[in-house]
Length: 521
Image 1 (spheres, rainbow, N blue to C red):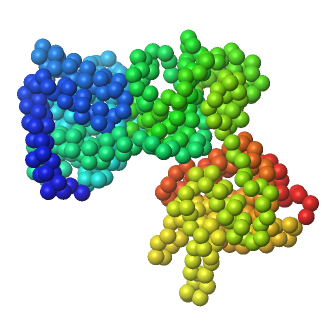
Image 2 (cartoon, rainbow, N blue to C red):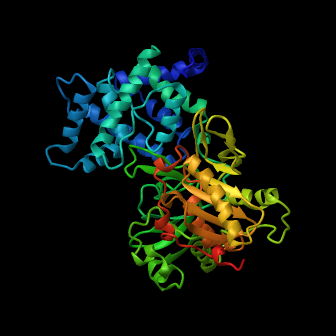
Image 3 (cartoon, one colour):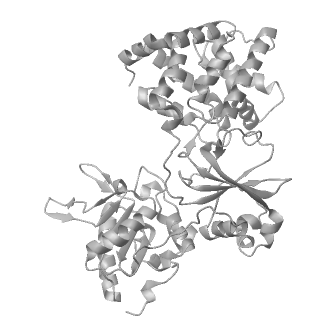
């Protein structure tokens, strides 16, 4: 929450100078030092200097237009809604543009429009200098108690255009609550708060986890983010499934039509209502590669089988490829980057009890799926009925526990050995009772022989996956399992969360790899 004492210390330590700069520039023509000051402030929380410099250029353009009187003025506007409607009409200029095109124009010139509105209507608007950094703005809001309205959906372009006005309402409420001037609010947003959170270090991850996915991304040689690149960290459209540490292969469209470089995701993905493509993350270039053209990919024995290659790389952004294809790419390039492997360590070790299976098989398996020990609970005590009966499952993954309700994403029950069909039926019966009690999406039985996975849609009846631990050594097999049950989100669990459709990945009641249910018992 906002701390008046800490804020006063900031002002006394030089913050008043930043306040005066904003006050002079937003109530009168720009002070000359406004441009370098805004640039320095933004570089503290935005790692891509191209984004910062583009915003500064928009401010220079605005200063020139204000000097020449080129921007239309609207009379009899008495509310945020009226101003936003007038700006909407100004951008359209009677051309009958689509909502998508109007939003594109507004979001592309966000620094220009929002600064102009703040100068013209300081009681309504606040300049917005978090382009491609809604993650920072959202974190500031949560930390200091600024109550943001719900973010519009990606396809609702008019609502995304109007969302700036809704944000300004929240910021003005915050300003009045804490008796701040507009200059003080801007100093708080763009100097005090980002530094308080740690700037770029608050979201760029230095010690990245091992990659769990490989995605394709698409660009062009004259792309704004890639052209005249000075920094290796850029903002890019990403798939909702992309996680920090994952890898991205850059495909340059026509005329290059070729893979060009390999990048890694260095931030968590986030939704940005003012980013045209909505979902984004920061990525860092690992290595440029010798270009491999689409023509060569079509002739390659591995890549020619991938759906995205058969579609001539149409819709490339966010398409995930299997580890075997990525490893094959590195082999073609004779590249020294690490291959993606999922090797079961100590495969020939002896297991004397269930604890051995949990420690040496199940926990490493969960870790490779992306679950930390904080993401699951062992031996969860669940009272049933009138406090006279309890369930104690082995592993409850992504649990949600309240005083009167328990739910989970995955229930996993461990046995030392399942050497017969009867033992498998008994183990599944026990696990199924736990899974039903928790409303779990997936139910897993694990033993030293392997894993059996079932799904709530058929009441955990049929196995959708049966794999031995040896089969999980295969990178593509593990890739499929990770896509099904890997840690891709936090939050609500249980059937109401509408999980990824297991049938879409595996087909209904389809086993992958070695089918343990058909092993000799």
